[in-house]
Length: 342
Image (cartoon, rainbow, N blue to C red; front, side, top):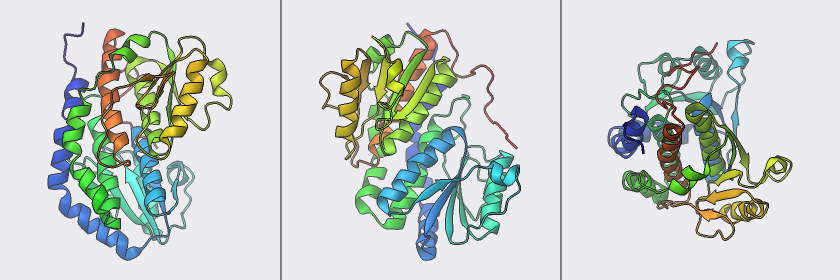
């Protein structure tokens, strides 16, 4: 039984409070930036990020495309920092995400985009960082100090900050109301019982699955297994996993499906059921499963905010897996809190 409370666990439990603080202290900046974006009326979006922050951008990519029909492309930071190419980004909304705001390559590409005509918005936990200085405007995520190497509350608050500005930009009152109700939903999500999944993870390999915005959550989950548990987890869209990767599935192979209450839920559940029929141990955050096993989950007030509650429940579970494996998730081997890439 786990007796030591890790810093990662403390920070997971702080997520609802951190989101509430963001909603309280970030309102003015969010509305101002949303109004400026609406005034500029961008034709497409670009993102600048790495690691967990890039998974935030994958989530926001789906949000942009589903809410506005506006494509969002991830641009490799090396385009500016290594290759020295000047972008042609006039009329673009550039979203740069970094909890520290210190990585030189992220800063370089954000500055490059702004100087080439993009409206560059930095989403960061450090509003005095080089990234904030390089951007046109800054959305602070108000997460408070995050000491554990593995990002948890900064990942969630970054998603909420980005989604909130999009909701204000669109003046989507239903989505805004769901975002404002998140602290209570996420508090419940920290206490979801995923113990059956913890017990099923005994080896060093597994799959995570998602579709649409939930695929970003699947990507983040796979990274956290690697970071905190030294487990080789691979994330796939449920539309891709049957096109080759499923070949390595054997009896008892763990698979986690992140399903929100959106139009992709039925498709993801169908794939999960097919994999379960092949002998895998498949867990899904949906009440629709029959062959696969249902994971306890919290539904929010909007299909776009549902995946946020899923990653909170996942974080609480993966910290338990790390503890069972005798690994300190606060200080994963070979990793530092801030990675400064050129």
